[in-house]
Length: 502
Image (cartoon, rainbow, N blue to C red; front, top):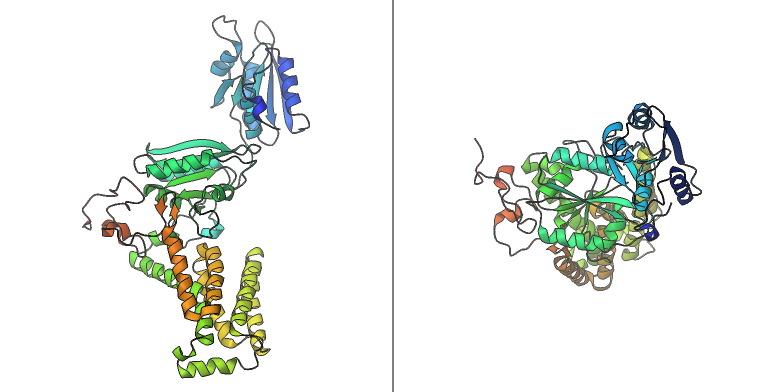
């Protein structure tokens, strides 16, 4: 079922039905799922022959019977010199809601593999493409990875048209634009760029379209295929392309001036640009009181700092800077380290590796079993390691606290793991000086990085508090008058001058 460039510009070979059927059979040689359903209508002055071509399992059989086969057999065709047979069928006989006439072979092949039905008629050099898609798709449900206590519970599924309709129900305006394209020479996967025309950042939209047009790949089965191709800083662990399975999140990002990319066959939708602070913004921040949302964001930022820096800081203090620790704490640490055969740095590295292995195994196991494995495994291994004098108790505490903090910022999982070990290596060689040097390198890289031309870190010199009312804290809705200027050219979000309605 190849639709290579050799079919570009190819037409149906003749107006003879048998010859066109034979031609399509040859194109799909070896495909036993293809159905050729021949029909004859003898209710008029002459018998007219038709043939329906479709892929079994991709179409709605009842729809074909009711809207195509039954009308074709019952319609009385009258001689009309002013209209061709195929036009009479398209305009008068069929009940299908979407009918397209074409003689392009490439379009016919695409229609069949996408689940549409091709109608051939005797004496006609053209065919009709009928919308009869009817394959089974997953029902709408709450995303497992983005559950919320308060807020909408629906999530995207694997059908791009279903996903676009869910977005349309969130943003009911003619300003919402959809632009379709196709990726994959073999998979021919449909994709759609979505944005609000009066709000979108034009430079971001232009840059995204430019990068997407350059994609030439054999197949795209998930949005991550596209992410790795279009993202800034391809060899960096920092995300510059956002992803979500929730329609409300996509709608909120479009309202800020971002662009969304849908891909057929996956519930994950991409959004650009993606700022670093978005890792700390949870879905529920906008559905609860702004005070609680702000406190939670601050806690996530603190958890990120601890998760990245705590192991390195512990190694630096115990190995190089013991004088900075209180004497009772220092004595307790050294007492617990008696009979431990490994240096502090190796202790921490071993426990971090074991913790990551436990977390990964728990994530791959089925639901409750995976959670039980992670909790029980961590308790048993930690206690056994301390009793066996393989590691010290303070190291277990540090690694456990590091892991708990890391769970609060699951979106930064990959970044945290890589840079945690990077800072740990810096601390092993130069102590706190190495830790500070490593942090300087990381911060320099973050402030120099962009996402489709937009800096991923907030501009510390930017004027106006409106740019920071939804960054590290969330201000009340009635105070957020303007959109951040680096996201949208249309700044005004609401009227009212920032005064609370009474």
